[in-house]
Structure formats: structure tokens, C-alpha cells
Amino acid sequence: MELVAGCYEQVLFGFIVHPERKAGGGYEQKWTSVADFTHHAHTACLSAVAVNSRFVVTGSKDETIHIYDMKKKIDHGALVHHNGTITCLKFHGNRHLISGAEDGLICVWDAKKWECLKSIKAHKGPVTFLSIHPSGKLALSVGTDKTLRTWNLVEGRSAFIKNIKQNAHIVEWSPKGEKYIVVILNKIDVYRLDTASVTGTITNEKRVSSVTFLSESVLAVGGDEEVVRFFDTDSLMCLCEFKAHENRVKDMFSFEIPEHHVIVTASSDGFIKMWKLKQDKKVPPSLLCEVNTNARLTCLGVWLDSTTDPKESLPSAEEPSLVSKEERSKSSKKESGDVVQEEERQSKPGIKECGFTGVKKKPTKGSGLVSTKKRKMVAMLEKKRKKKKV
Image 1 (cartoon, helix red, strand yellow):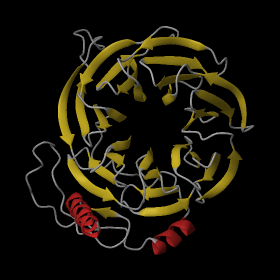
Image 2 (image 1 turned 90 degrees about the vertical axis):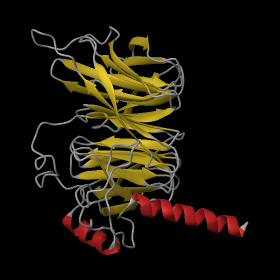
Image 3 (image 1 turned 180 degrees about the vertical axis):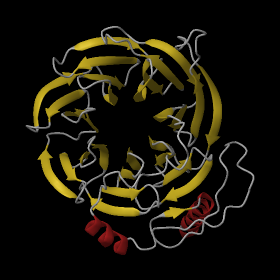
């Protein structure tokens, strides 16, 4: 497995984690981590990261989404459709990526061809967060227009709009999709899907910056403080709290492997920490390992390397489509020029600081995949033009 984290310093870090096995089977209580790469592809701080079985994608204030092939350790290029900071990135399986940005757009991407299947003007202001229902048929989004919006992803259209009193900055489905939470500052409203109404409100001590469901009823909450708390979303009670970091918690991620349920936390103090969760969530978790990046971390993901054949890790045709065939054909006409065909790959030395190898691509007009080199050249020319105007 590999920890990936972005930071204000424009760098993406990768750390390989080795769960230590005991002689008689099972895992040791302490794991080890090894630095794998640091990659400086963006020209502004990283704001979002998402992971599937093959790729890691990062969003930034430079308005681009970068794609990294973790199997081949190559930079796969950049998506340049948005005009504004990328605020959220979510994969649904291996087939689709959904992005939200400050331009108010939500885009559905084909994660095989990397073309934009659908671009939706979702909010009147920036999209602050989005979450995909486990079924892949619905999504929720919140923005600075004080609305919570439900999206029909099969048809690529709005299904429901709810006005809320303040701007929410996080929305998240539970693992089974029977409930969802909406975060406004330090308040967490819990909704039931069947009634679409608030069943209760959890109040955290400080502003909430990250949440992750540990089960259908237990929610981990991190915010502008060193502490992480576990809440029961039914009783609304705090089950436990523990000091995770020396500074605010910026992002969290949870996953399960045999014998272990793990929560990962990233903080402004530069540390990424992995914790083993106890069966009884009233008991604080124990530390498995920690990594000091010496950077101000902003976003976090965990890439779980599957032992399947590389062909099997590619998007499956059996996965449900997030956009109907009719919508896709309309969209492909609109977004013509999105797809950038890869030139024949030449064996080229990788970036020394990175461990990812460069991929030469032939960009065309449109809002699809472009090479990192081309994007950086355009950014430099743009800066020179602005200086001349001044």
C-alpha cells in the first residue's frame, strides 16, 4: 500500500507502507514506511486527491487535474477543463472520475480514455464538496450558493435542490448510502436518505475540516485542532477522542485490510499517521506508523496495490455508467477534441526527484489530457504576457 499526500508547497508525496508480519502469522503492532517519490507537477498548492486501483489524481489551485499511473510509475498528463481551483475529486470504481471546482462545474470523466463525458453547471458559486452514492447512481454536492444538490448521475441532471441556511463545505454518504452528513463550520447535520430530512446535529469543538465514516453509524471527525473524535450518528454522542497531531487535522482516510481496520490522518504539522481501530469505537485507536513530510499537508489518499493482473485493474465494462449513452453522445460532440492520443512511448529518463517517468503526448484543442511540459510552457507564456501588459 502507498500513502499519497499533497501540500501547500505544490508537491505530491508517496510513501510505501510495509505492514510487518509476525512469525506465526498476523500483523505486528508497528508498521514501517519508505519514501517512494516526491512529484512537483502543479504550479500552485494541491487542494484535492483521489485514488482508484490504477491511478492517483490530484487537483490544484492551478486549475488542473494531474493523473499518475501508479502501476507504471508515470505522469499520465493533465485535465484542463475547469477554470478555477479544483475543490473535490472522487472516483467511482475504476471507470469514472467526478471533479468539482470553483467555476461551479461538476465534470464526469471517463477514467479510461480521460475524456469529459458530461460537464454540469452545478452551483451559482464554487462547488465546495461532492460525494457519490455507493450505487453510483446519485451524487450530492454543496456550494457557496447555500444549496445542497442531489444529482442523477445516470441521466446527468439535477434531481433535487435543498436550500440551506449557510454555506456547507463538506457532504458525505455513509458506506451503505442510507444516510448522509452535511457540514457547516463545526456543525454536522445527519440526514436520512428515505426522508431527506435532518435526524440530528453533531456539534464539534472547532471547525470541521475532514470526516470519514468508519461504519454505517460511526463517523470520525477532524478539524482545526489536534484532536480526532468518533461520533455515533444515531445517538449523536461522542464515543471517544484522542490527540492525533500537534496541529490541525487537514484530511483523513479509512480502509480495511484482513485483520486491520485503519484510519489515516494528515496534518498541518507535516505528519501522516496510520492508526489501528479497535472493534469497540469507544476505545481510542493505536498508532501503527507515522511519516514526517516537513510540509504543510492539505489532502490525503491511500493507494492499495492489488495483486490482480494489470489488465484486470483497468476499468471494467460491467461497471454501471454514470452517464447514459444518449448523454454521452451529446457530450462527446460538445467536447470534441477532449481526447489526446498518446504518442508512441519512448524510454525516457524519469524526473530525478520523482520516480515517475515522463509520457510524451500530442495535445489537441479542447479540455482533455495535455502533457505537463506543454501546460507549464503555456503558464510561463501567460505570465510573460501579463508582465508586458503591466
